[in-house]
Image 1 (cartoon, each protein chain N blue to C red):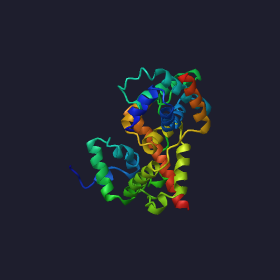
Image 2: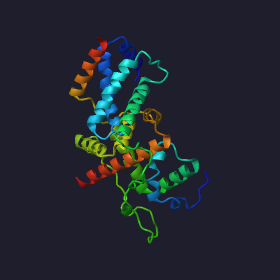
Image 3: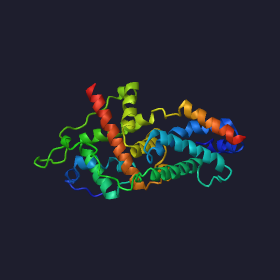
Image 4: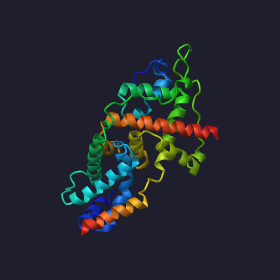
Length: 201
Length: 85
């Protein structure tokens, strides 16, 4: 965001339009990321709102050594973690549990076949003209909503918002490997939902 | 790049689908990336799979980013005005 620096300077000067632009840009994602750590949507919303108060209180100390975005999400994750611990939740990523395979095992040949592990039911091409239809987008939105909160946050930031892997790792304090594992699970699940929808209808 | 005739068998489709994200992220070690490429070159099912994954990413990128609710906006603007005073 090239005008982010200007917005931050305007915010420091007390400009309401700048504040409005920043909350428009980031608030929904703050809630989404907070939801990784706390138990309900309402608590996540609360943590995101507190984060903005902390931003207002601390904006004079913000020196621009990191991007505003990184600073903002650091404040959020620190608060959300504290809140989650108080709620007695364990931190996400402390244990990445074994997960569903990207594609169910029954789509591949079994060990008794000449080509074990190769496609028994191979995927087919997606019809290009249907991909950008409104209904297809809703299918993807619903599939993203249905993901566990950590996967949902990672795929939203990476693929919907277009953040780089590095930005996501910094903002969520994830290792590169964990970021990729979460992204992989999320994308695999969304692809499967899309395939199912396009084949059924 | 050294490839033998059996590189295609060497990585199964079931293994390949679990490597797709690392492949697209440029995070596969060289040897594994070569095996991935060799497999893809001969396997139309996996070509389709990779294509589907790319399409999924493309459509996700075309979604409208979520925006904040009017209630949240109101609460935050109230807080902002309180802060300015």
